[in-house]
Image 1 (cartoon, rainbow, N blue to C red):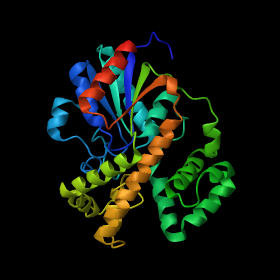
Image 2: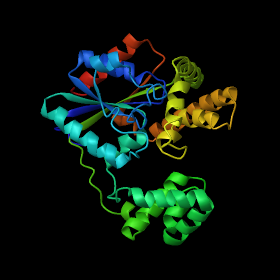
Image 3: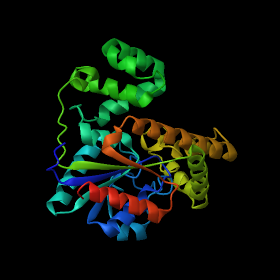
Length: 316
């Protein structure tokens, strides 16, 4: 990455580590515009469960790529990259610094490494495949995938309906296996120089306590009423990407009668911990020499001071 490119801040980390608060503090110190990197915050009506900033916060520090689609609509990493690249270029053109903040690591990777030119989702094909899924089961569809794209079938778990459906959809739309697209050259040009700041836990137990407390606060703020409103719409179901989000998936199952309330809370907290573990695993693969890691347990003023010092040394 050329040092002559203008900088952009990538503020990354697992859930419940205070990324949003730090981003807002940075905006008060630097000419930054925030771009949300969160696969749940893109959906309207999914506010409490995604820990979306409230209206007052958004008024003071606007976030791009929040509330941009309906939960019934799929939103892919490719769509994110397209929208985020447009926002990055617009922010840079005004002489400001893009501040990308969130925990959806796939989106960060899509920005840096690009994506293959897979065909866009087709509603008619997707609806037909979802009908087949309901009538014939996932095993039947995965067996078909083995026949048409054995390489993708080997990568995709037999109990992963979302990725199985997508691989079959790609084959039906293009006549080519998904693996063919993944081998093609991709455009990974980024018009900026990412400066990565990562909030991580020094103590995993502290992160677990914070996750549990945040889940309880979500419930106190009306999370179940939020999910119930989505549940009653009639055009949403448990297999949609939006409804498979951590927390929403467990609450939806409770409303469907699968679990009692106490079990739902327990499973929601466990799922959030597992999600944080996956985020941390992803971040471990990032080279240490290209990012600044610090513990979220430190006092906010100390975190801000350390980050500003690092950014100054990185020519921000």
